[in-house]
Image (tube, rainbow, N blue to C red; front, side, top):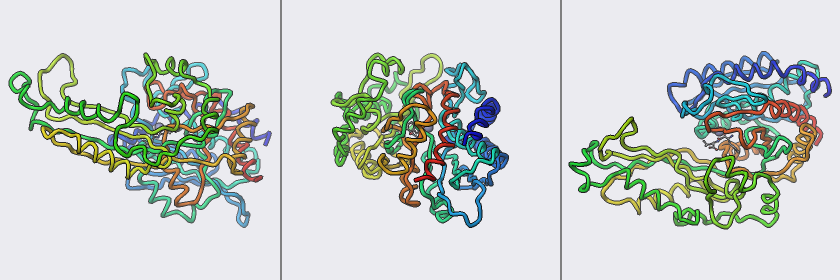
Length: 456
Ligand code: BES
Ligand code: ZN
């Protein structure tokens, strides 16, 4: 194993250059004009996998393609088989003006590599590919067979990956899934994430007058859709931070005493968090700490709110419509479809007759929990400790990785979530960055992980 680790050490500069090449593709899955960029990015990735000694193909789907790459198999050898999952798509980079350098022109500042997709998720899964490269190039035995499944639609709900898993169930049958697409609390605090929140998405539109109207001529006699939407949405959450949709909290599994103790031990306390996020005061569901609120309590969030004139100066109109993009984060045992129904029912009940409510349903995924006492989880903790030189912590995190439940349901496989992103990585924000020490240690962790997993 040492020769593989030495190889990693001596090749970091090239790895960073390769990561920069990967980051230059503006693979924004949410925006249709970027379709060719996603294709080019998938091609680059498949080529890169081939270059380092894997067999790789770009598999088309109804949406963006999936890259599947396999380590060389030894005929007759029955070795553990793990999937490594990641995504080459990225969140939209807007607003561009807040980036200190263009989002798809990677910039190194100290040990931090700035670019959209650096932490979420190109840098994180490239670490695993570099670990495999190190093993293959140094003749270090890879004690597990690996299949990389890197998709292009994670940031938009992974809807085409589910049928892909079903169609390739036999080839993807595995002993577990390894994912680096989560976080770690500090550079010296590696983590195994044992819980993720689920999600359910909708867009709601309130339609008012048939066209934008002169607000002086008609204002006062006709409802304003932007105002109606503001009033409607304002009723979805109480001043205690609780979602007011009836039935929303039914079946929510309460924290155990042990869980609350584990949450309390984590760093990034209220004061630090407030400073990191630049808010005048934190806000969340009463009765829970900020770590609990953002890691494992359900929410109702407005992700986008649009109506009326947004250009320079003023324009005195009553907008014809107002639109909101909404997601709820979910926890065990909230079912996305049930929550979707409850929210829609509540919105319909509260919507005034002076506007017409239109609801478009989006993606949904359940929350995820992993038993940290399982043998693979314990193996992952050992690999983290060896690579980072520090005792790892167990986390529950608030983000969602929609496909993990399908890995369980369709393939029967648990997902080990070994995140390499730091809390200040600014994923989904302007100036996203990835720490190159985490990149390097992630590669070491991956080399160690296959040894540990093969030994259980
Ligand atoms: N990497 C994140 C998920 C994540 C982030 C998990 C931090 C835990 C901690 C992933 O790329 C992501 O952003 N997922 C989306 C999924 C959604 C669009 C269906 C999310 O959580 O918003
Ligand atoms: Zn993301």
